[in-house]
Image: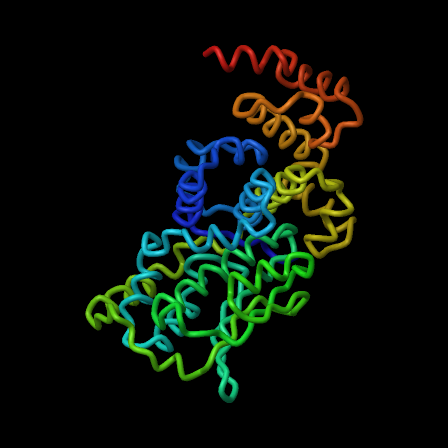
Length: 339
């Protein structure tokens, strides 16, 4: 069974800051995953990658903008990521900068492949999540490619053109918006997300080149390679998978979970039993946690919350919530908002 990926806490914090700067309310978005901003801030552990990508999806859905990830990537505060940003912006050349950035990308995000390749006259900067438990990755792909495109143009200047962009997801319905954003051809349904540009750009000098700062940043990255928790435990990974599925009202049954975790149903259930838990108990716990957060942080009607969480009808949601929490969803919402 493949382990689930994680992303550094600072990256998630900066994402929430970027959402707030765009006029969105991070708390209402996090509520759909059963999270609060304070709970994330208090945790020093890495965020499951499935949570990070679902925050992006939920924000885009709330905004009603299919190209939201592109716009957010442009405004993300990359320098605030620390050493991995410093090693890029203090490199002597663009080629050196992207080579180091992709080499140390695993210090920021695991179960992901970031590469810089050169073939003939073209350079390819690619990005792809290898974690099969991350079901929602459309907005993450847009966000990351847009961020890397900004890094590229920050060095070579906005007037330089790139050759084309590849995206894993289908963007055919909105291809004109993507072409307008990148100023080049965009192909969807590809094997990797990638930006292609003339290899000669790699020789371009970086304006902020600083050998001393660059060496110091790389030393910090080498020392902290193991700081990012490479895998989360199965229960935490499953909870993140469920939160992501329920946030979009997807099927959150054990068969789908086993398939995404890459094992047979029998093996998956055995692994859970070895952890001393069962699937239905975990799903019920996640459902209740999401319900609590949505009741407090949003004005979403109880019927809509029940449907999102996969209940057959609102009365079933109310009965289960009352049996677990001791009061009805409506009473819980009223009481918590008056504390």
